[in-house]
Each structure stands twice: as structure tokens, then as C-alpha cells.
Amino acid sequence: MKKFLIAALALATMPLLAEDSVHDFKVKNIKGEDIDLSGYKGKVLLIVNVASKCGATPQYDPLQSIHAKYADKGLVVMGFPANNFGGQEPGSDSEIAEFCTSSYSVEFPMFSKVSVKGDDKAPLFAYLTSAGNPDKQGDIGWNFEKFLIGKDGKLVRRFATRTQPDDAEVIAAIEKALAE
Image (cartoon, rainbow, N blue to C red; front, top):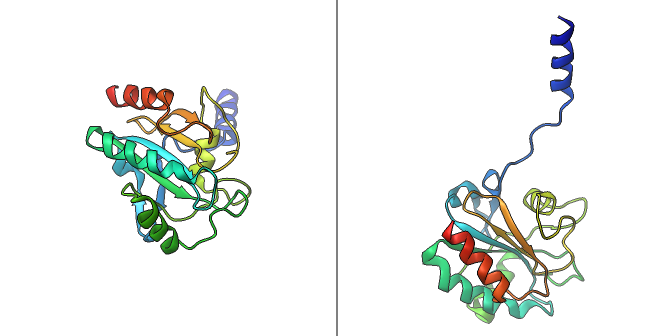
């Protein structure tokens, strides 16, 4: 009986299991519609926190090029606008959507503006910044950090803002993830 009580107490004090992959999250797209990320099982995802008024905003061009080149092979680029850094994403979702379409011809999925840092950090980004990662854990440092997600929904790699989306290292990681 004593062993049973000790085991029961141990189970009761264990933290609840956290999300196991990005497929466990639901988010809103830029039109405000609920999107269950489990619908992307079997796809490779490149999740990027984006901003319209940032020095890195021109990264929309290579992001769109990568999306166009690899979409039929199973890659989905996903843009998550965030206003956490220098107020560089001040617009509403509809203003952001218009900007992305008119300025960069973005065709990849865009999502509703979220917080990627701080007390109000979106659950998806809390997961991404704490998930085991060979590159880096912890808070996002600036706009346009890139999170490469494997077909199983697990974080594969994380790339800093200064790493261009079409950098050879990013492309190699994408191609490897698509081949697995």
C-alpha cells in the first residue's frame, strides 16, 4: 500500500504533459478563421515571425520564392505577424494581408497577429522557443526568426533573423526535412 501511495503521489505531482508537436496547436489565420495545425501532418513547415516595417521585411521575397519552389514537394511557409520588436508590425490583420499581397505577392499562409515574446506569448511560440533544439532555445531575438518543422510536427532547426531564408544552410535543412 505504501508503494502504491508513493507512486500515486509521484504521478499527481508530475507536470501535465505539454504539447508534443506543432500539430497540437490551433491558431487563427489572417482572416480570423480557426486553423488546426494537425491538418499539416506530413508537411514540412517553415514558421516565421514577420513584420511589415522591419529592416528584414524584404525577406518576404525569398520566403515567397521558397514557398513557390517547394510547395508541391510538401513545404508550407507560414507567416505569423508580431509587433514585439520596435513596433514594426502596427497594422491590423487586414492591413497586414494587404501589405503582404501588394508589396511582396505573398501566397503562403499568413496568420493573425500574435505575440512571440513576453507574458502574452502565443502558445505556439512558447512551444517553439522551449522545444529541444540544437540551434537555440529561449526568446525570439527579433522579427523574421525561422523555425523549421519536420513532417512529424517536431522542431528541426531554428534560424536567426540575419540568416536569409534562401541561405544554403536553410535550403539544405529544408531539402533534408522534405526527404525524410
